[in-house]
Length: 415
Image 1 (tube, helix red, strand yellow):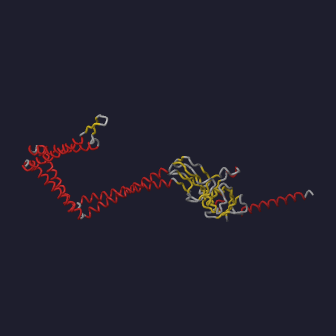
Image 2 (image 1 turned 45 degrees about the horizontal axis):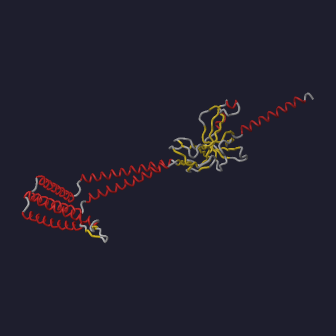
Image 3 (image 1 turned 45 degrees about the vertical axis):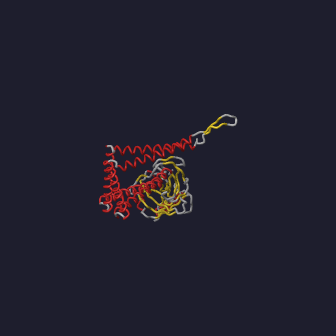
């Protein structure tokens, strides 16, 4: 019995060694496995301009599409500025049309009606000069006997008319006295009222006409004064200058626009076009500002964090929403230095998570670190933390959206 016990112990030891050697060989021949946490590329949505928040159109956990509007900022001021700029553009474009029309008119030359009008203006000015000169000659020569006789006849006629108006006025103002039945006397003035006012106005007019006729006769008899002669000469000079100006305008109309006039008209067109372009550019700037007041999701994903509510005022660059790209997830795992050579770019991998047991997701190695590092502190054992490892980036497909950021996952690299 004593001899059998060592033999039994030997058999157990051999069997245990064989089991351990078999497990070691199996582990060495199996695929490389690593663990990590599913992560996503997230984007923080921030405004380029500040303002008051009107609407937030996405909640945490809500799926959004690329280009979908998620936040509206107050745009009332920009819209008012845009309306004002649009009016400025309309006015500037009208100015361009007017300047172009003026240039075309100058370049085309004078029309027949313009020449006729300019010639008529010259004729009118010539007539004015002749009239002014005739009046000056009359003043210089003094009054003729016939003029004095005509003035005296005008006085006689005005005096006769004044006598008629005076008699009519006196008749209108006359009152009558009569005795009543009781023996008392009373008076009545039938012309008072409206007729009285009319009679007074007619008499005043007749008096003024008589005075004017008398003044005209006195003027003819005494002759023109120096002041009247000077004023008449000034009228002749003015009429002569106006005639010369009208003649110059006629000559200009017939000869057409000068080169400097065309150049000035062309410059006006260019200035108007520049103003119109500047106004249109201002509209473009305002449209860009208006577009920036609506924040859109840059990618299709899920809202991971919302840090804003309607009514709040935000500053440029403030973090408002964080959006994760669930269609492109990845896992960073760490491979020991001894097995670093087993990993290659583009290598396929299988990803498993506890939330979906029995289901496998596809992964692809997209980046392998070029420099070794110590295992991150979240490794459980001190021995593991002391090991140098290489970080491996594995992209994970998530067509059904089942995988979420933060899920622990195991990665099995294909051989």
